[in-house]
Length: 112
Image (cartoon, rainbow, N blue to C red; front, side):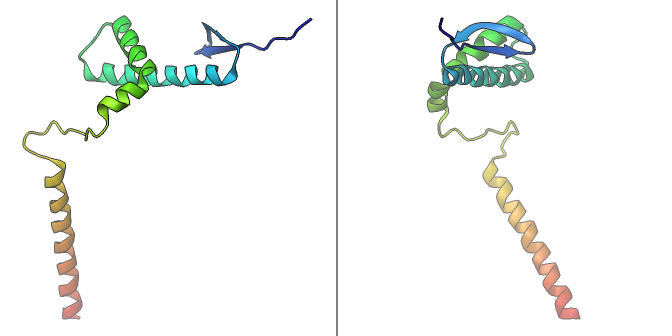
């Protein structure tokens, strides 16, 4: 008699149909499903797609192709929806504010 170990993914208390012989493969699949869940939430938040089945299929499709998606998005910087404002505009304002605070602090020290 042989003893065989099988790995089954259980999500939200439900066994999925996938059965794995190798623990590493099961963990890879589980991480892919985690990524798909995160992508589905992102897609839902966008409001672009309302059909749950399409969201699920799209998120699983993208998650299964994670390395390809990462390669496509490599080097893409976060985009702000604010018209005419970029990340570069915000940094000098913070620096200027810090400089102004520094100058105020220097003036107080001179008076004392």
